Length: 389
Image (cartoon, rainbow, N blue to C red; front, side):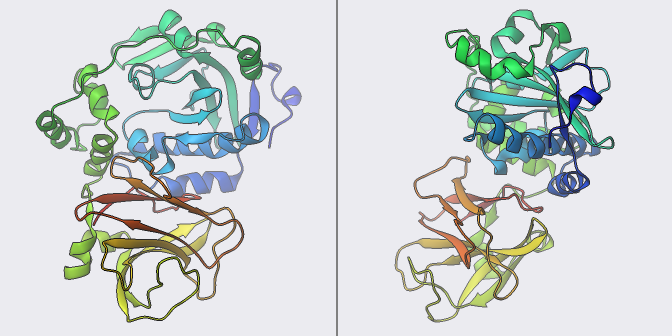
């Protein structure tokens, strides 16, 4: 909901959006696992802002807007820095939320400006007041503007730009149409990829949660190169939570689910498998499946991982079902698989166009390959786990 700003703020260049109590509860539940209180609070502010702004952007301006790079990756960003990327036709937007009362300047972490694959066209300043029940978009700037006019603070590696230099959010889309040739992205140097041995040593060091601000612990060129590798970034997040950087499906099948995996909801069940391409039950010999308990929009669901029945190929089936017998998957739910480094591949998604019994994806893998699962809406328990096959 958009507030009537005439009765709340006299500055019509700022957009005020409502935060409902349910929005607060949902965002808090979605940001459970982080290494410090501060990193969880940062994740909460970003998740809350995303939950409010993404539907608004899609409804008002860019229906095709999507999270950058995907929902499963978000915790690995929020563990170490502030900001959320959204990709759309106009380019990349980065939401920069803050609960600060003073909005005299916008502070953008260096990662979103100087890592080439993270850098955006636009940066949106957002003031978040959960207790008051509102979120205020008070302006935006461009990448070129940040590089030309912002002050760089080496002590916390941020670019700060004053409110006077920030543009009216209401003219962003109009400016894009009227000035399509305007330079909005400055040139930035590429970062040198890290040797694998150096990267692994850094992960072991920075994966220690006692290092409170890992982003300031090493030179930016090295830090940026580490984060630009999505697999390293994901491993860093998991190490800081004390999680294994990958889960072994075969090991669980043969030896049983590990204690850590069981503690976050994984288990084993015996079920009747479904043959390749079938949407209705086809009885076959009983097989073992791994099951992950999930809470999505207040409902209980199960993510199942099982080998394809009656197949000599190395094919695995990943499916989402309602945990309640006879229950359905609501329209709009999506099940998506990504590679270990969080990249999409052909036929990696199944979406419920109407209420359905289940969503599923079957994928042929080589032994030793890994997958990351992702579901929309995002489950409370989602951590972007890497499943090794």
